[in-house]
Structure formats: C-alpha cells, structure tokens
Length: 47
Image (cartoon, rainbow, N blue to C red; front, side):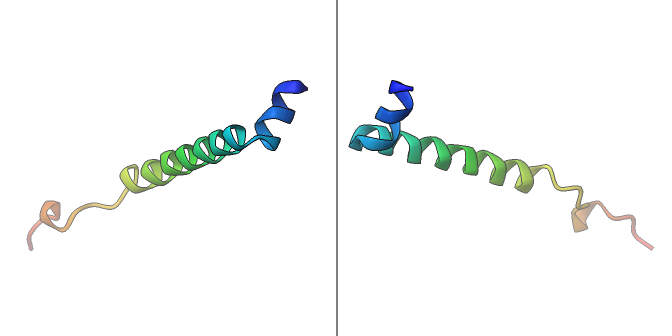
C-alpha cells in the first residue's frame, strides 16, 4: 500500500506513472500500426 501511495503522491512517482502509461500506449499504437492486414499496392496481382 505504501508503494501505491508513493507512486501517486510524489513527483517522482507521478512522473514514473506517466512514463509507464505513455510507454504502454506507444506499444499498443505500434502493435496496431505494424500488425495491420492491409496488402500493399505493390504486391497486388496485375490484370
């Protein structure tokens, strides 16, 4: 309980919490960006 109190009440703890949330958000963004199932235009079969 003391760790959570320190995480959300001190300056260093708040910066750490913001950094963790930011990094998790970046991970989700890059996963969605690079794991798309779109076929590039260069790989489509010509008619």
